[in-house]
Amino acid sequence: MQPLNILQIDASARPGISGIDPRGSHTRRLTRRFVERWQEARPQDSVTYRDVGRQPPSPVSGDWIAAAFTRPERRDEAARACLAESDILVQELLCADLVVIGAPMYNFGLPAQLKAWVDNVVRVGVTFGFDRSRQGEPYWPMLPAGKRLVILSSRGDYGYDPGARLGDINLVERGLSVPMSYLGLTQTHSIAIEYDEFGDERLRASISAAEAAVDGLVAELARNAAEVVEREPVMA
Image 1 (spheres, rainbow, N blue to C red):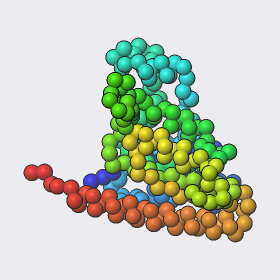
Image 2: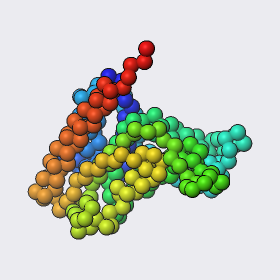
Image 3: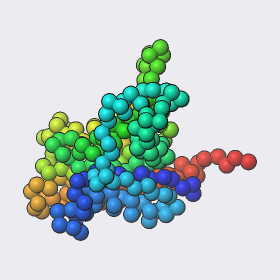
């Protein structure tokens, strides 16, 4: 089977893992479980790990914007240095077949450190194209086709799924799926733990349900990956 590249991103400000460390992160718990289950199913695949919760990317600045919108051949040394971190993050995304992001809900949306990652990988001429003279839509996605995004979230309250009591104010999944689909990563899967602020049996049940969902998703995606490889023609 052809090996795949997995990009695992943790964004929680909490360094530990729930169930192991006091006040540990639920999203780190889910990303760890996902990747461990994936490696059990497909040990030939590689994993690139990025912890933006503990090592946040630099936020976009005026100099960054100027450098990003300057043609590569016209960038001076200062402009190239300004984009160096972004270049690394973009390359990790471009190389990934499966992107697994632990995205806790902070004030209904993404943690600032994860939003900084998003802003660093949305790059004109690299991950999306723009041509004002192009007929119709002047923007187009540039990520290679076939990538998948898995969003593993956690919420203090409950009822944030689409159509539920607080679904309209949940900006986490959309905060990732919208910009990623803009780049061409349109196949998205989401799983979340709820009731963290309650800390009772409902939280424990939500954790168990989320872990079971992670296991099921891994089995489904790993099976699909194997089927795709089997269908690919062998070149003589």
